[in-house]
Length: 152
Image 1 (cartoon, rainbow, N blue to C red):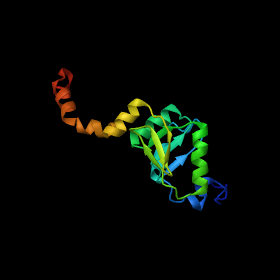
Image 2 (cartoon, rainbow, N blue to C red):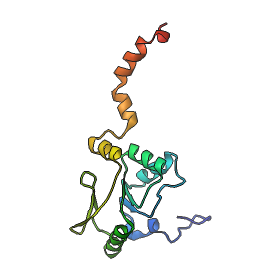
Image 3 (tube, one colour):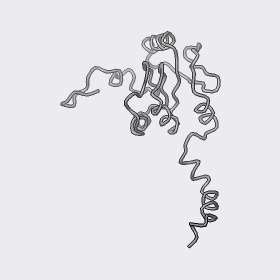
Image 4 (cartoon, one colour):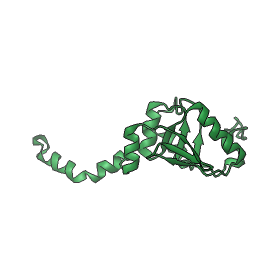
């Protein structure tokens, strides 16, 4: 997004029309080369809570889901329909309905897909594995206390 000297390049993320966006619309294989947790963390910290793409790099998708960042797959044709609508109205309100597999905008929708496990964990609020571990801390302690090699 920036030149070597720190100046902004022409880039959609630098476009003031999209300054308040919370959803990224992208191409195929989003997150390729970004397998570390830092990639989805940077997206979340930049204010984006969802990505609509043609496909996702597997590790990126999993790390995003663990942060609660919604990643849905939409066909090339439908992404172009959405991009055209955004271009006409950069303030367009977009809603991703994870439960019904739909992306809503301008009183219309396009179909989207999300992996079943990610969908369920997002709908149930169980997407954060650290939170799950902490909620089960008493059970973990109970098991470790019963292990013979953990006895003093």
